[in-house]
Length: 441
Picture 1 (cartoon, one colour):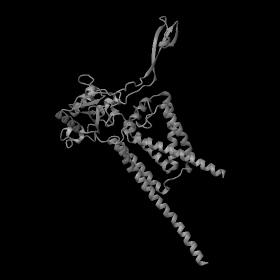
Picture 2 (tube, rainbow, N blue to C red):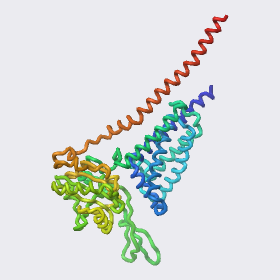
Picture 3 (tube, helix red, strand yellow):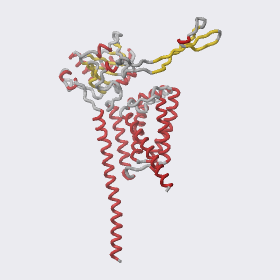
């Protein structure tokens, strides 16, 4: 009896850990998969921090990010459903054995601001990430040791179907979001955002608190002081250090500044305050931008000139790279310079396009989705394109569930029917054998 209780408790612990790992890996893999370029940028940050960016081609980093998202999502689904138990528990343990020491190093050395484990959906500090990984490592060890106690929701004969569909689904989703735009936008520049409001610091908001220490020298001895105990003039100043003691309020958008290249002036406020429409072409590195749809971009510029709308190209590239782009593509639109990281955050496409009115983002397009002459048939005031695009995360999530969960539920239902039918056959044979025996006697 005591042995049975221990077995039940152990099985419960294993399955709790399995669900914790499964849900975490599903979420982590999914938010990376819907933003493959975001994962790519984070991997580039890692490579630069470790001095490896020159050794790893960008295409390798991109596919590594997509592959990692796919592995995490599949491992999470396998653990949650109880299929491929050995492989899933092995992979979960290996991932956590690698990620936990890595995040400890990140917490101590702080080479990147956050690990990007949940993309832009949930941003954790490096120490928070390490604490989370310690918990997941313990769960992975428990799930691995008790992998035979993981309860199945789908029989082994149907597991291959679920495995293949999960793998196919997550990679199709990643490449769809790569060729277009992320289906979920977790960044501050999402459609419907009033950028001026998002750049405003509320009245009474807490400011950053800094502490400055001064290093002074007297008689060959150096000592640190603050303003509260600053010594007399007999001490000689050596250097000062300022550190952030307490983080204050930071508006969601704090680094959007348009510096017009031709004049060298900041035109941010006049663009965002314009009650008419403004097209913003975003190319964080113009020398790396895809020029296969340049005709469409030039058409949109001509359309904006014809109807009196503003059009600016935003980039962080040098003047010579901008001039080369103009020579190659025939671009006549004005350029503004902006921070590279900000441009990567605004739109996950190089180039991409925004439509803004009164500082509000009405629409966003990747270079594969740009409106053409068949859409731009009239002034924007008279077109659906001139209205804010209807975006609903809840509706998008329902579509995702429709394409992923519904087929899995169908497989589960068929699996239950098949299992029940197979259970009935032996029972029927046994009943027939019993009846035949009774008749013989």
